[in-house]
Amino acid sequence: MFAAGKSALVLAMIGAGLAGCARDRASSAPSGGDAPAAEIRGAPAPEPQRAIAAGPRDLGGGLTIEDLIPGDGPECPAGATAVVNFTAAFGGTIYDSSAMRKRPLTLPLSSPSLIEGLKRGVPGMKVGGTRRIEIPWRLAYGEAGRDPIPPRTDLVFEVELLEVRK
Image 1 (spheres, one colour):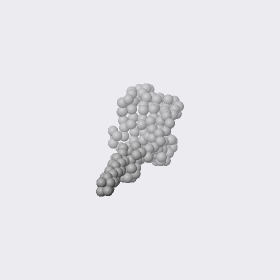
Image 2 (cartoon, helix red, strand yellow; image 1 turned 180 degrees about the horizontal axis):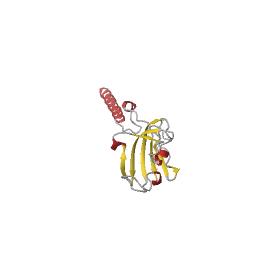
Image 3 (tube, rainbow, N blue to C red; image 1 turned 90 degrees about the vertical axis):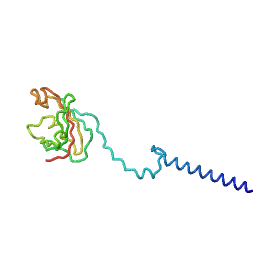
Image 4 (tube, rainbow, N blue to C red; image 1 turned 45 degrees about the horizontal axis):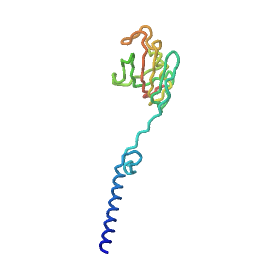
């Protein structure tokens, strides 16, 4: 009888040990949906991803825009003043940027000195958005160019709209 009781006790201990192993294995499961709620609860929530807009749009005359990140703030109307971070390039080479200037750029969209491609490419953006604007040379610096931009050079801008002033 003592041997039977001892066997029952040993089996109970083995069962408890196996159950403990199963719990340990579950708590160290890789995160793929099998992780216990306690591990997920302590992790920071992922930031929501913004929807990526459809591909490039042709605005005519060879000017194309593509919203890389749609903004969720106020929309920039034509003729407003836009405060932007930007990168400007031609031929794959960056020639100017707000990072190089160490400050955002203020673009009065009604200014006669602003290139036509930006006057037409920035309106419609929403604050918080980023847009790629491909500007043909006719809507940039034209036949003459402007140092360091050679004549008849297409430009590519990536613009992040920070603020709209009307």
